[in-house]
Image (cartoon, rainbow, N blue to C red):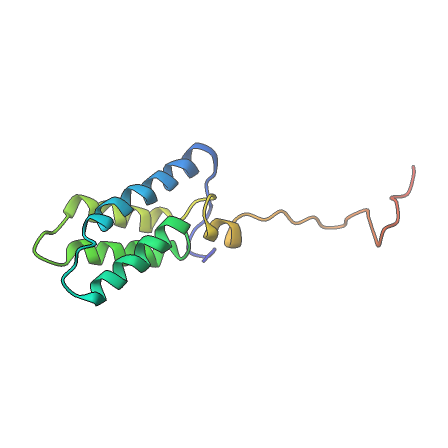
Length: 119
């Protein structure tokens, strides 16, 4: 997942991505009254993945497909789903927590509970 996205933005851009994910769930929830159970199950899975921010690119692609399928196509919401697909999950998601930025400290002065040498 980290290879797909260069960064996982936090602060205002990260909050914007959370709002984008929540906003994309609204039209999906309005389509909940699907005539067959398979579509209802797919909608439930996609909404759950988007709310948690887990597997966000796959969930955004499935959301775009679900919004573009059927008699009432939702073109504006499809573009939001594709934008989310291209932007990524952000820092405030399960993807961001698992695959996000990490700080690596090389050559730590602390080794096995000993204090660093005094200079």
